[in-house]
View 1 (cartoon, rainbow, N blue to C red):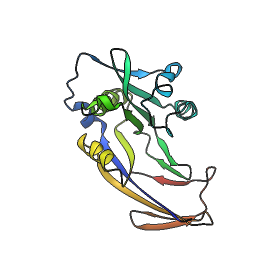
View 2: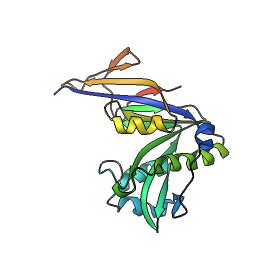
View 3: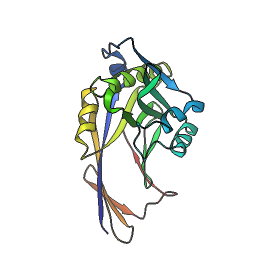
View 4: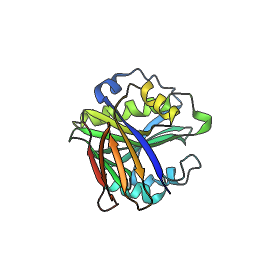
Length: 198
């Protein structure tokens, strides 16, 4: 079966994100989820099923990733994972930034908490901490067909920089266009295509 996929890479300056006005309701607590607390996310009904299991968090926390979360009356209602330097978007694709880049990965907001700009608050909160650690840029990847996610990223000031389109052929051979430039190969988990985002 022939399969197609396409993603945008988006970026923003952490200083701009940190400076955004994110007045917060006093009932909302923003804080980092420690490794021993990952069950707050993995046991929550408010999570995308394929990107928030225990193994997902074990892998990313081992690579210096951590989740920033919003709580209301002690209940987790939104979270986003952040990780420095690189991200595995698909098992066959790795995106690397410079030493000053942090990636915003998987995120989720409980249905009853949507529309409150919680993701903007979480991103600004994380941006302030990563700025203090010497990072300068936030990057993220979004499926080209995911209009709500694209709109949410654009709303907080992120802009599209790269577009990666891929076709997987029945032999598992892939043809990939990065901003229109063609490359091809049998990219695998242990030998991914590596894209250096700028």
